[in-house]
Image 1 (cartoon, helix red, strand yellow):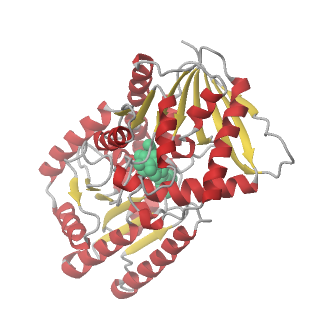
Image 2: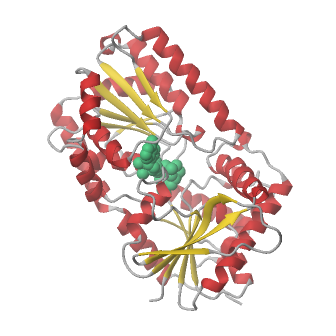
Image 3: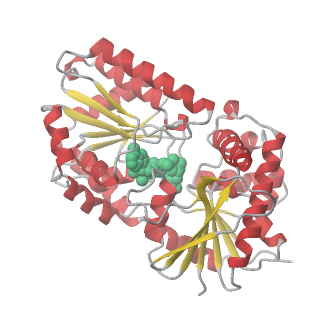
Length: 450
Ligand code: ADQ
């Protein structure tokens, strides 16, 4: 087999020691350990270019060559901020009302995809297999085919695929679906996403392409990380600061899809309706700022600042604070120990492609005394992880009841539930996800390359 070519919007810097906060980077790092591969995409830098395409910078580390290009400030704004994050992201998370459509941004999106194709082309060999990732790059397969690329090309969508009745709100949605015909295989996270995608294709007279490949983590690595982290100074400091209180943990990028205000209100409802937990529980929410340039994200931040202040103001004692809220990323090594220390994880997205934090939490637990996973019905992980307490994230009272149940659950039930969850997390890993996708891509009937 030829090389594996991964294309994603962002390419993580291979020399950065700490991991970026993002599921795609985490999943792929685990999947890229074997064989020869090239990872192509944006460097994360904006540079003013005067005419012509950027030239990829190459950096080889072990068996992976990282090839990155810069974007101009106009490309960054139109392609990344406005179209990918301001239009596709809300729409694909079922939030049509937050979509700020503009035809100029759509044109920039198509132009940047065509530019990605032109700059990738000279790096390709005929026997390569190309794997394109995520909503930033829907049209890339077609752009490559237009340049005569005959390799196998697969696409994986990390975010949900909503029903056609929503997707059709996007002007040009039909074109995106037509472009998908250039891929030999289109992977999505869940059977529901595959059904929505295939139905959208069908109503547009196109053949089905979608198959579900739920992404996973590297549970062994995460467990080892968590065990090691328990001995580290941060977990000790956390433990000391809790002074015997139970810990409820939330870990998310600061994003409106993650249901953070609803979650904070759920915790507030716990304190209001179950006063016995006051002073005996602490909620730690780690939510590093993400996409700070987009207005909706700035608004969300203001809303959370206000909610945290209000809840802490109302319930704090001079020696106890109900919510600890951090908007900086924490190193994964430290987070892993925090997961293990937490009696409950509160993961309540309004919509999420998969949600790797849920899987990491399960992998990090101590089998002798595991914590409880509280998970939204609307995370892609929910169908696989229904031994957690599943909640409707829109209902603060349901979140409060789930928290009370988790905080009072006996050891026997916690162990039984965790064992089922752990088996699930160990059977669908990042490595098996990538291997399953690649196998299906090799086996898929090739699309017309003429
Ligand atoms: P994300 O929306 O980024 O990913 P998620 O799947 O939860 O969401 O992955 C986040 C990753 O970043 C996890 O590995 C987590 O540990 C890490 N992370 C999150 N917050 C962090 C923090 N505060 N500090 C350090 N690390 C942090 C997208 C989709 C998801 C899908 C993934 C993978 O939105 O639905 O599961 O891709 O396909």
